[in-house]
Length: 128
Image 1 (tube, one colour):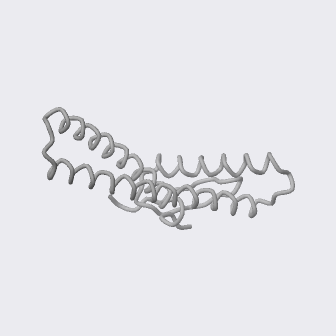
Image 2 (cartoon, rainbow, N blue to C red):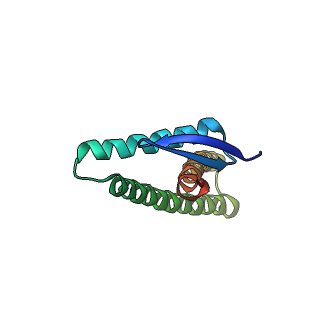
Image 3 (cartoon, rainbow, N blue to C red):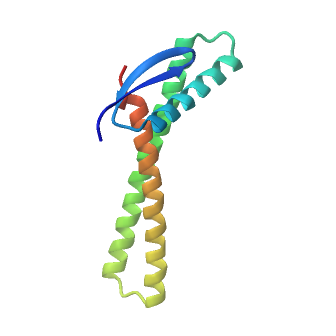
């Protein structure tokens, strides 16, 4: 996919970003950030725009780190389940249950990877 030049508005400021992401995705990120900053500014009139932006960035960084940790835990659980499946003398019913757990964890892992990708893009993937 080629690089897209997209105009966004965050907290009343206009930016042009270059990204490989779609216009809709990028505008969605900008809208989410805009809403979060505006909510902070409304809840505390003493906050400056830069302070609210830093608090939002810290919140997104925190969520990103927690998502990374969740992904790592899920990968480890999947490895354990796969090992149990491959090395344990499991009955067909146990194997089926383990496979269902693995499938569930894989789905959850993919969702977390997508969220992690979104946060990483929001932190460093877009440039002015």
